[in-house]
Amino acid sequence: MIVVSITVQGQDTWYGEIALYGGGGTNDIFRFNELVGAGSYTGTGMWTGGVDLSRIITDHFSIETGIGYSHQYYYSSPAPGIPGDDRPGNFGMISLPVTARIDFLKILFADAGILAGLQTGSSQADDMTGLGLTAGVGAQYRFKSDILIRLRVYGNQYALLHFAPENYPQTLYNSGITLGIGYRFIHLGDCNCPERNAPRKRFY
Image (cartoon, rainbow, N blue to C red; front, top):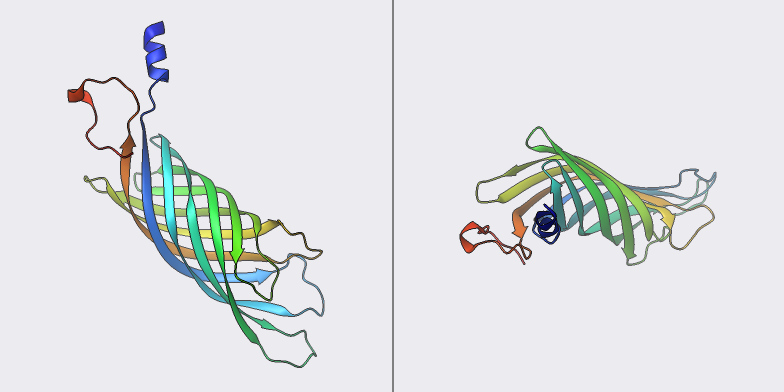
């Protein structure tokens, strides 16, 4: 029994999924405690794309990470009573999420976790580089070929914790939908399996 236990611990074989996605949605730049008499920012939409990587722990639980990019559009308005025109602007956000995912009812899933965001480009609002939260729900269907399609509705709250602190920090919220296509793979460790028993589908 001791020999069997050691052999199991030595195996590094695991299943995972990799998927490319793209989509879009709405955005909002705001303060949790808005300042009286301050200018305002109005989001006018965003688009996003990226890659997700999942490590499957059990039939119903996975750990996910990846990298994504979203491009944000907005316009700023002067404070009430101050003359001036609305000014359009845009900037990018690189996101690095780490989430836990639960699968249920065969094709449905829900996920939530933390989100590190890095702003690219300048904006008239605060720099949104910092830590935030992400959560989503969706549906995924996997074909017999192990190719999968995924639809996800999500919300990202950026910059709950700013890397460059502000006295009255602004934050960025995104909500949207993405469509992804990917593949479920198996990563083989040193299992010392006979060749006839080794899984055929590999990913290194």
